[in-house]
Length: 300
Image 1: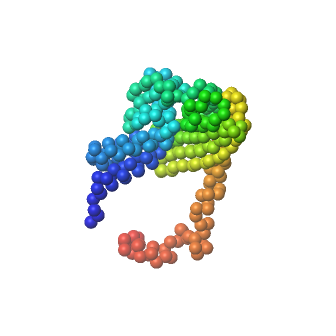
Image 2: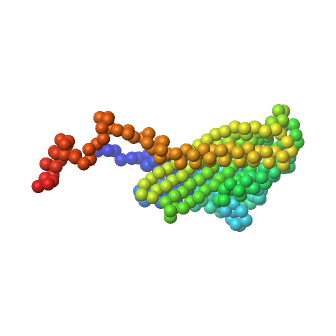
Image 3: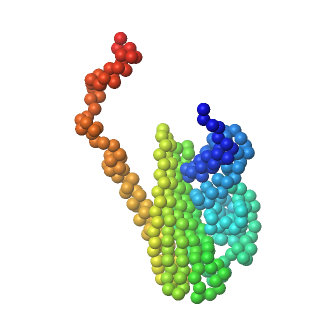
């Protein structure tokens, strides 16, 4: 007889299912897990540890409490436990991760914001990213954060910005959910007069009408450009991002449009090991079929 799982094991299993929920579906998974566990304490422990990880990894977008805009929940915007910076509005919001809502909002302190010199680059990049998002992602959001060197006051020192792009399309009534997440680390190297770019893109999709098909595709790339004024740098960097994301999306579309003629056919043999087609029209020639027929009394 199998041993009963301990509470710790149950919590770890519940956490795995929550963290690995498809895009936009963690609330549905959580509801099922709660009913399976039948233990509110175990569920609340699993949920409190899993939801923050899920929300940050999926770069979920939440509406500000005053409905004046939106904030992305990311590791780059995390100031304290459950507190996240929205650099566009210079506000800090408190997030209820399990309910996936913003509950409070306050102005950011000076030490939580970058210097005026860094902010000039950040704002220029943010403005260009808004234009790009409106063209490429109808339901997308972006934000630009300073992750290194935010106290730099003038040229002569290195600093790093991060552009986060998140787009989701949830349609559970049509049995389909999907998301696009990309993170672009941008290092400004003053001594080399160069800006180095490294990007990570992740596409997730879940189709579950009369089945269960999931897509989890990832891609990384690198590029660079010369260090220029904030506005010129922003235009150049967004053009780089546009190029790589468009190229990756095109490659995805091409590979999946060819699935029926390539991958799916390679998943099975064209002929059995015997190198002959199975005679579906005359299965009685096989002893197994005869035995089953005799045992079940079929045909009598």
